[in-house]
Image 1 (tube, helix red, strand yellow):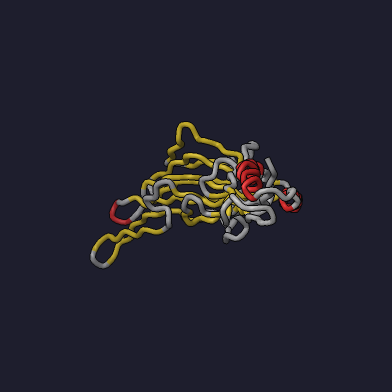
Image 2 (tube, helix red, strand yellow; image 1 turned 90 degrees about the horizontal axis):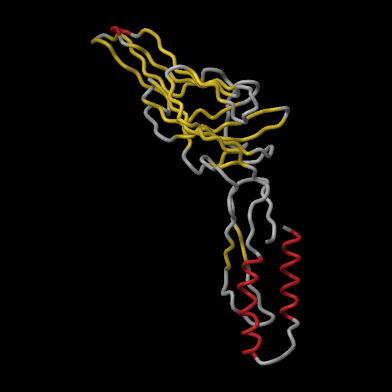
Length: 240
């Protein structure tokens, strides 16, 4: 970003030394230059390397799914649907996730666009409850109990913290849950740059948008501030 600022100041310095002529001439020159300058300042995030996997067809499971987030042949998360006998001939249903090999997850449902990074609270515990529906016998008959934030959730996201070879990566997995009776894995992704964030649902590097805080037509000696805002960490920019 320092090199970008140096380039900007060189352009600004060039503008301030325009030979003195008519104001109309200067304005005409700047009107032609500014569209080029705005284009020149268009930037894109070059750090984020998003590796996206679409599960085709979507994997609906009443058993277990071995999620290999980085597709290296090693299971990173085990998502499982299990059952047990409940009261009054009902069936108890559970959907649970167990991180593997030192990885962690945030089991609560995340919405699209949430920043997944080291700022979230993760757990590496096994059999973390995503959704459950169980039955017990009470004083006045059978009583059902529901727990877990994934119960009947469509298009929710798991926040994942993957640990491989001593490096930490952040990613997401998108699922649907039919109550606690089954789950469907739709797709998943992670940022292949260690310790770098990703947005829930993000499938490609974010594109920066340049905003001018003042009019882009001005006279010699004046200036305009150009800014770009992106959420996330470890981001860098390049001039185009």
